[in-house]
Image 1: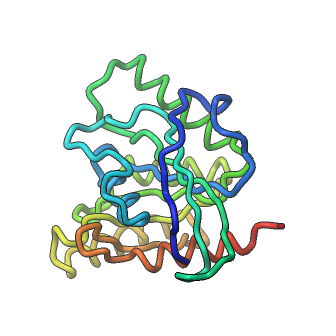
Image 2: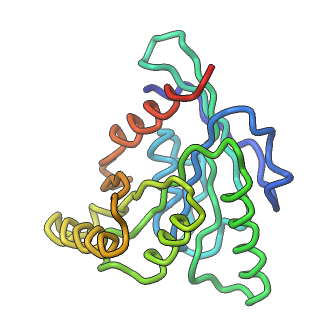
Length: 210
């Protein structure tokens, strides 16, 4: 798959204000400061598309990006889909009331957005399994929402450490999950994992009726 155009569309404070659910949608979410914007920019090959920040809690609304792609460079089989940047979960310097509001907004989006094809959960590959990530994974399981895992920042640790952390996370999941989701190890700096992610999205797009 080759992306021909990627542009910011709108930021919505709640799911009812989102754009019409008229095309496939892929959402990205993770703990604050996990490198979500960098992964989105890597996928779209546009370093200015999603705003990156060193301050956790920067993303505060449901951000839609409009994507146009073709099966390969030069092809004419244009396909349109949405990429969605969701607020991070976990630490952010906001009030308890604001945090609850974010959580409700995210839950409503995940459970009510009918064109949502896949949620990509981003996990920092430098660290051993974190309870907050496992809890979120299990929550999506309870809601029966399809998801895949993206392990980020692989360039900031040795390959051995990242591989060990990924293995440990999947082993934790195996304690309660019969089947494990697809996972990708990424480095936005080295473009690692981009082709695999593009292939996953392309395959899912092909399964969309019409």
